[in-house]
Length: 314
Ligand code: CP
Ligand code: NVA
Image 1 (cartoon, rainbow, N blue to C red):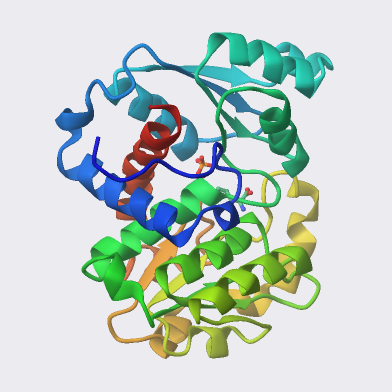
Image 2: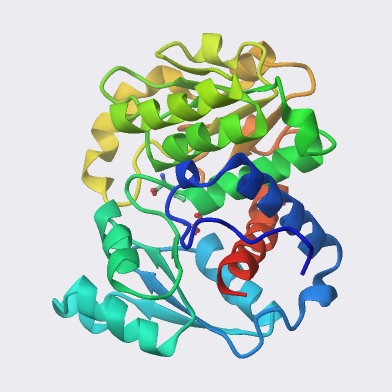
């Protein structure tokens, strides 16, 4: 399973917790797992992963479940509607009990604090499969995708990623990841929907150490200017369904369309974590156009998730 030292962190809750070396180690392992999956067929033999879901999922659920199977282990889908957590069993008891059965827990929750508490009270690694605040597994897979597109992680240095849309979990994790690969990031969101100050501050700490820039603006064209990647996400995340109409109005001029893509570099690619709403945050001609890499990006969740599980649970 390679010769690098293991991740210094015991959990994957935020990309901010990873050193640059850890981050590059995961990108490198994801590439090796993708090229030679059979070499890792027994990497997690006899191990089980409990997967708690308070929210819906296609990619995260399937990539972790299939990934665990391909590594020789077992994944258990635990909807919060079906386990006692959903009926009020304390998070701390759930964490302690699951730690007696499984070798790792992946959780997708509303409150970020739920994932933090699972890690605090349990004794097995906890992987953040998305909270209201962060989506580190997606962002890691996204920088893996960009490293493939531009010819290696080392080739990302000095490039810029533009995130255009809601200052949400995706924006926060992309801001944390960019400095790890030496990229600048510009986040364009309407006023009132910008990234959270605390996450901006932690991203800027990482950027200062890496000598990169994290810029926040309300001008999508300025953000896209000179970018190698233009990224967007839904305007209303899971749990914000009731705000959807008002958000469509607020984000009116933030659709990633051909004009926005034209501001980016000529070799720029379009990424979206999915699910996408064509005609809202992205024009159909961009999502399904020549610069789009959204399905390679979705596939790479599998390889990146396998790398995370091998590092944390193996
Ligand atoms: N991108 C992502 O996390 O997708 P799912 O919500 O389908 O898991
Ligand atoms: N920001 C979106 C991401 C979905 C993968 C959400 O939280 O719903």
